[in-house]
Image (cartoon, rainbow, N blue to C red; front, side):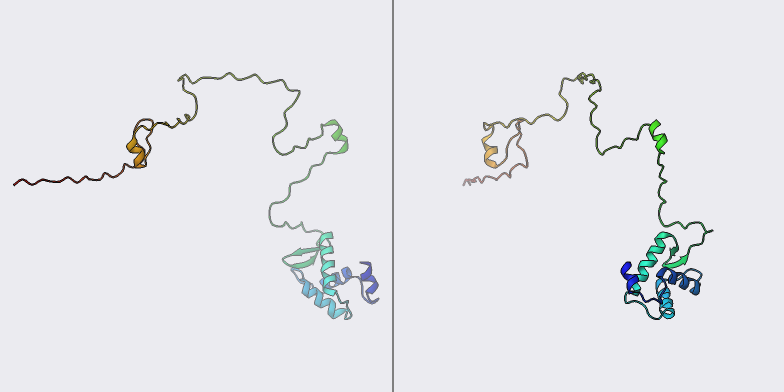
Length: 189
């Protein structure tokens, strides 16, 4: 910003002052947009710097953030001290309650919680062990284990047909097609 003031001709006032004069002179009800402010400044103060539009944008943003100007619907206007602040879109932020330093010493400091499961307390007494409760049926819980495949061939025909047999003795899958055997019919005369 120091280089801006060195290169500035002595006849130009500071940019914030030029912006405020432009807003007063234009006196639009809903404020003035950046291009109308720029055109007014160019027409009033003929000799401007090469980076006029960049400087204007910079100073408008600074004045908007400091609260001198209000930016609403792409227009800049002077802040009215009696008007309530305009609410933006979305949910308003929660108010931040900070403890005073004097009350912080009397109340325990809030602990910050980390993500995930908290670590076990080493000073806590051990929990009593749970006794296993049986269901009374004598069967173990859950899915039964797979039976081992029999290694000896139960049925030679099933193996040759490409099907395997289950422990119950029935072959698994679709039964093979039976081929009709041809028999000779003898004719007696």
